[in-house]
Image (tube, rainbow, N blue to C red; front, side, top):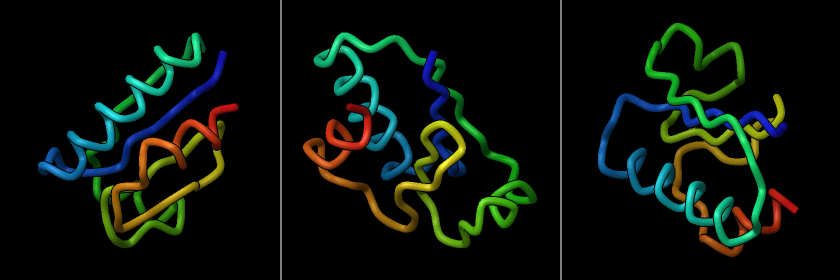
Length: 77
């Protein structure tokens, strides 16, 4: 099962990223564990200094922006 982490404090951009990820998973028919990580002490361990951050299976895919729905789908394939 894929493991996805949304790094952020719960701002509007973080919530938008989570919504896009969940929609992409549903559209692609992929099961995944989606976790929200809000502990700012964890972010630097991923090299993320601006939120939101998106980590898929331990690999940082984006930081400091909300990637497009199409980008997210591509990363999940």
